[in-house]
Length: 494
Image 1: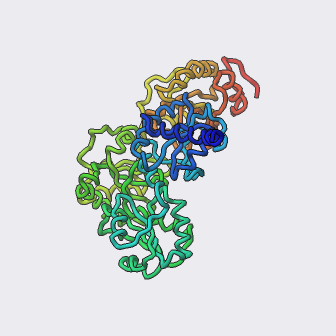
Image 2: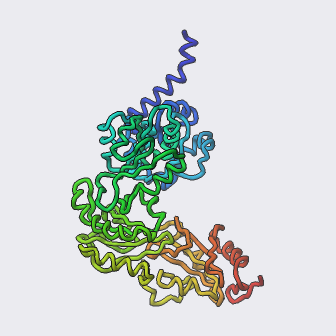
Image 3: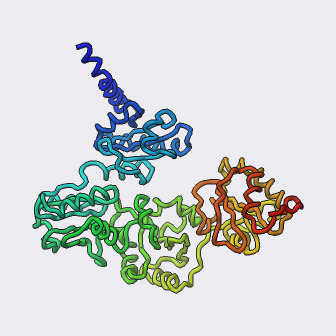
């Protein structure tokens, strides 16, 4: 008996540790190399945060992750792994940056988590991963309850549990369940009401978005593959004028997108929310073939973005919609005329857009009155003049005033500018990327980001990835410069 107790002790200890973690004040389970596999195998669905204690992004995520864990308790387990201590498990799952979020099903890695990182966003996203890939429906009432939802619904209709098409549908549901809702039935009669004569798939758009301008239910008939199912959903899920949210914005913004921002609130005021959407729909229905997707959005949900991208304060234009077009290439246009209730102003805006008559909206600081320092200040309105000067090489730093790394770099960058101040062929420049639009072609995800833009090849900016010391900048410029450098009045040979 003693030997049996000793043999069981490690498992008992792990169960005790897991229970204490779940039942304690912290709803996020802390896992280690020794217990990860055991605990993960016991969870149907688990979201794991791989982190480092010193990581700033990890610290920012921590309260949101904890809040999500509290709300998802009993539905989805949220866990964390400190990769500075548990190197074996982090190495096994290929963690190279922090925080890394991964979804596990019954101990097996399902996919990386690429959804929103707010507590509510994590909850909404992970609820889609809980339970079966596709919900079985038995009756018409089951079907009506399932499709009466805030999000769109995909329902497969099959003749039996052994149907090859059902197997294909379930494969697709497994692959796409994180993005869409799936259910299925083996009662063909449930499809007849929606003009589906035999096996196939029904796509129900959200009831709150129903309108006379488009069908609320779309169907995919006959034999189909996972690829065909994916294409069918992609082409029809959003309709003519979907509701843009923080959760779906990445998918919708893969196209040129017109968005109408207003006090949209489908939870408390669905009728009022559809008042402006119906006016957008009327116009959008006449332009469905011109490559522009129309959307509506809650102004408050995007308040920070509207302020950062368009300088629109929370109290500005609150009674009438604010209309923008954002292209895949990063170009922005705004409708300056007030949105009229007959939709004529939106029509005129679109006519000008498709005719190429609109001037792009560019967020820019004022042009500096004096700009004679060793480092030239660039704003969005002077980017073309300074950085795209065809005769000059330009090294440009994209920074933010609050960035600690930028502040540390500033004296070194200024010294570099001083050393090259007499060189007529090169410009050392900087731009506040938090106050100016970054031009298309420059990928600025963090600060500082530095690019070298060569003379006569302005469409080939090269990102600087080297050490940020003066001597290293100089060495880089000696290699890349179009002409020999003139350092403090002394010409350097190439």
